[in-house]
Length: 439
Image 1: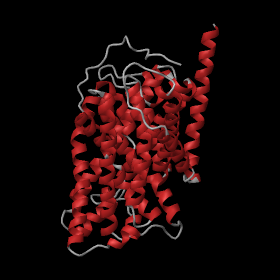
Image 2 (image 1 turned 90 degrees about the vertical axis):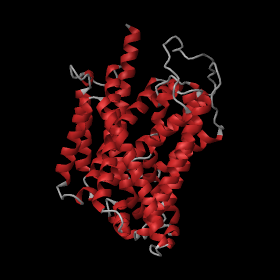
Image 3 (image 1 turned 135 degrees about the horizontal axis):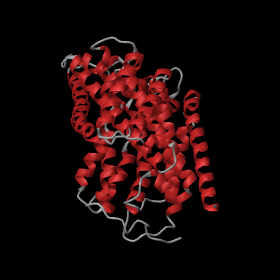
Image 4 (image 1 turned 180 degrees about the horizontal axis):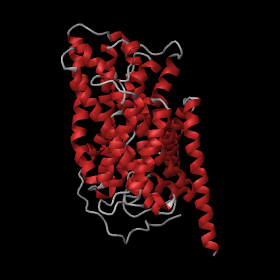
């Protein structure tokens, strides 16, 4: 098949984003709250060599990033994962992918709420987790409903703070080692009593993958990038590699400074590093971590509510989700519904299960996107675009399926209902399309 994009007559956006600007955008999107709350859980699964699952997850993320780089530069005006898979496989698969993106965001907000209610907050005050979850997500929903401009203003400041916090951990790790303290031997300790070395790496990689999600949303600004065929792949791969380096160094610092058992038991693993170093007041770093977690939850909540609103506007979800506030013009019903589901998940799940569920849902998305690259190779478009070596999307599919085999049964128990709902709604949408064509 051969055709040019169908949106060629639509007004184009100004190409003002440079390679450096796009690199910083993606880096800020990827470097986030995950490692603040999950480094300890990864240690409990994989052993002292926390950096190994983080690096392994980076390699797997780069495989799928190659597919996004090709599709984003081939269809720079496209709407992301759902659009690519719709183009390749039709609206049924496209809807499944879009719904999985929505569900992953909702689950992630629930996981981050539990991270916020953990040991970082306890450094200030000890409160029931359920109460913290409800109040925290309620406040974020209120900020979301006030408007995206207010939310984005808070995000810019929070991103600087959370990146600075990760740099501080790396520096503290170096200082502790220079004092002759810590245990460098833990950097090579792979495995636990429950998991051998290979099983430990694979299981830890599922959680570590959570820290890299976010790069897939950068496709939405490919149209605004100068020379996207050249700039987008460089910015995407560069940002992921830098993020992976930061994560590996943070994981190594935490492992060297804090005994693995203590790290695994903490819901504030990086706070353990600060306390062991004895240089920065723990309350200061706890505040930084709470900002990072809150910022991640806010941004993901914004994405989820807008995606729910957009799908409802297109007739793919119930119409009441399209209601907006008269003056603010924010999708208040979509915000309430997505927030309520996140609250329910946080009150009934654990941080590890919810984080792994988000990864499971995105593995479905990434598998479909990698497959879409193979199918759309037959589709020709005007202009040059980045082409990934054909082996990489194939390896990406294998990697995603391989990671899915490492997902625990309790994670599937949370993820499968979302997939079931997606399949039912996709079937209803397909039936409506057939009915409309026949009348």
